[in-house]
Length: 97
Image 1 (cartoon, rainbow, N blue to C red):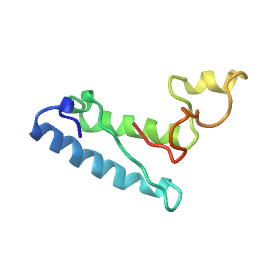
Image 2 (image 1 turned 135 degrees about the horizontal axis):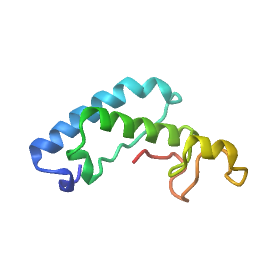
Image 3 (image 1 turned 90 degrees about the vertical axis):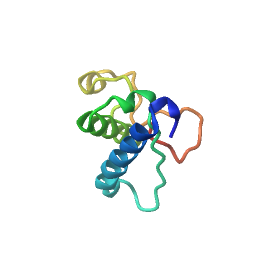
Image 4 (image 1 turned 90 degrees about the horizontal axis):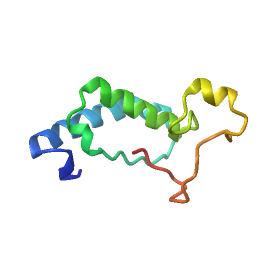
């Protein structure tokens, strides 16, 4: 975890919260999946509920939900948007950020 998240106490708190949140969501992943969760600098200031919402949004993007930056209602009406997750040309295994 980057020092940009905060001091050691804050990084540890964020790490514990993310571990707990991911543990509750592991059953949503296909068997044998590997996921990397990267805490961004704002995670140190986020409360538990905000981290949960952000993690849920990342899981939705990862598992083929709404692409980043798209509102669910806009995605349903926009025919130019391809279905499924967007590929950034990186590792096909994917990672949640």
